[in-house]
Length: 133
Image 1: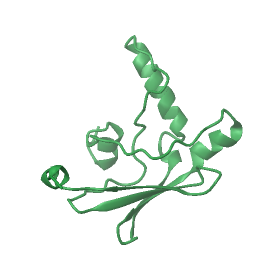
Image 2: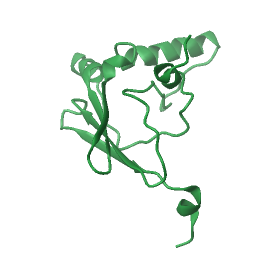
Image 3: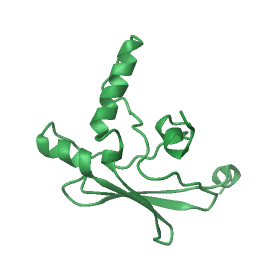
Image 4: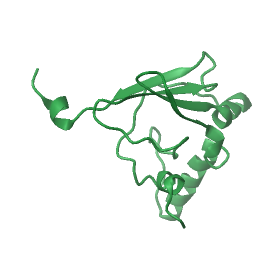
C-alpha cells in the first residue's frame, strides 16, 4: 500500500481527537440510508474560505458500509460493538493541517432534514488553553 493522504486518513494515523455537536436522531428507514450515503461535508476557515469538500459516499460508498466493516473486523477478534460506541469512519475531503489560532467549521449538507448542520472548532497552543484567567 502506498502511504498517501487518503491511506493515512483511512487508517486514522493522524486522528487524535474528535469534534462532536448535537446528536442528530436517525431512523432505520430508506430515507436515512440515502441521507447517510449522500450528504456533503464542507470545511471552512475562520474567514469563510472553503478549504475542502467531499461526499459521504467516499467512505466505501456509504458510511454504513464502514460501520459494518468495523463490526466484522472486531468480531474476528472476538470483540463486539456496544450501544453508544463512537466510531471513526474515516475522512471526507482532504487533510487540513492546523496551527494555533486556526478556527475550522464543518458544514454537513443534506444530512439533517431540518437543514445544514455546522460544527466549529478553534485550535490553541496548550499553554494558551491552560493559562489562568
